[in-house]
Image (cartoon, rainbow, N blue to C red; front, side, top):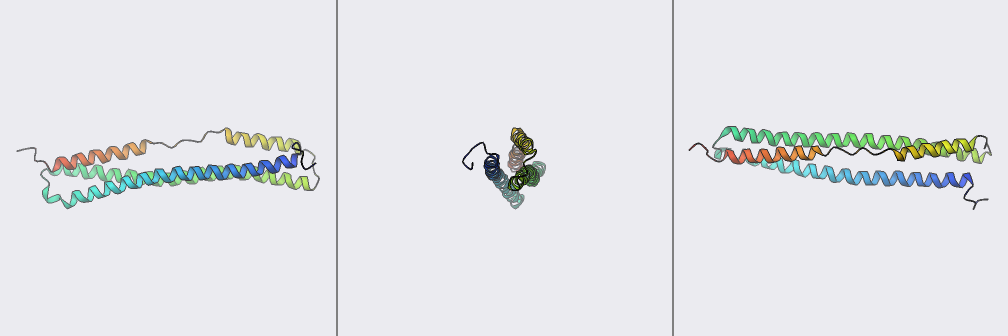
Length: 176
């Protein structure tokens, strides 16, 4: 009876293992992607901060103060958007993982409860319960994962470019 793949107990145990493996795999891949995105933003914010700082160290050479101030404003805006993105990324990460863990742990709890019922030979209505849990499992994986907005990267980069251009123009004496 233990080698019978139609045995609901074996099926339940196999699905429990698969559920845990999928949960581990999804969270691992999501973590790698999140880390890469946040590393990119941190690097961009660091470069923007260095350029903004260098602009202030060369303030004695500024020929036009208005472009300089606009450039620094754009650079600081880029840094602020980058920090906001990092904060939003962490909040999204918490929401994503909490949602998946809650759904998967609920299903795993139901499967563990079914295992207890198998142990107690309390199998009345167990097939219907197992079918319901299988359907719930299927609906979790049929829902699409929301992709994050990548407009953050574009906005940060645009602020960076405009900030650098305005600072460069501030060192040129246009009105000779």
